[in-house]
Every structure is written in structure tokens, then in C-alpha cells.
Length: 179
Image (cartoon, rainbow, N blue to C red; front, side, top):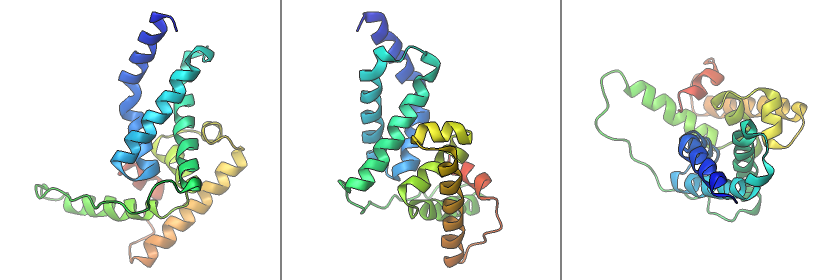
């Protein structure tokens, strides 16, 4: 790689890593695994960098690497399903307890989805990608995205109902609360 390419890649990483990390975190549900996932996706992006002529598509390439890698991790089951519990700080402000509780039970329900459904929902509602862009990221047809999102939302509603939470909330809007 020419030095300017390294600098350009470093600039991409500096500017887009926080957003890509959030996506990875929503895919795997663990900060450490999300960091590993992001690192692997950025490595794949770096290797492909000379082939990525249209720099406006680099982030889409990185998101696809995150998504496909996360799905393959689940398939290989190369990492444990046990996760350490994260504790919430005791410094909640008045009125925010409900929001924290809602994010917690929605987060737990999201983690119960199969990886492709979770990926479709994260891409569509958290990353706000179109169905076509989500299909590109997931490497599948638009119809598959539609069916994965529909099945995922059904499953989320079912899990939330089983836990005694209201299912009349707009789940796509509630997904934004996980940010």
C-alpha cells in the first residue's frame, strides 16, 4: 500500500470506528466481543482496501464484514454463550429509571434472537439502513431481509410478552433507545 492509502484508511478508522463498534456490540451483545469483531472486520477492510475503488462504499463493506463475521461466529459457536453481567451505575437521574429498565429488557430480548434476525433488525432499525442496503450488508436478497425482520420482530414481541412487558410499543422506535 502507498503511504497515502494507509493514511486514508487510518482516517476512515478514526472517524467511523465508534459507529461500527456500536453495530458490532448490538450484533454480539458483549463489549469485548464487539471489539474483537470490529478488529476482525477492520482487518478484512484493510486487506480489501486496494480493491475498494469507490471510497463511499467502504463503510458498507466494513458493516458487511461485521455482519457476516458475527453470523459465522454464531454458526461455529467458537465463543461461549455465557456473558458476564454488566452492572448499571447507581447514579441514575430522576425519571431515567424507566428508560434504563426498558432498554434492559429490550436488550435482553434482542439477545435471544437468532443471529441473522438480530443482524437484520440491527441493520434496519438501529443503523437505519434501507432493505436493499441491509440485503447488501447481509449478502442476501431483499426478500430475505423482509422475512428475517418480520420473524425477528415477531420473536421480540413474543419474548417481551412472555416476560410480561407491553408489546404495543413500536419496536423499531424502541430499538433506537438501545443506542
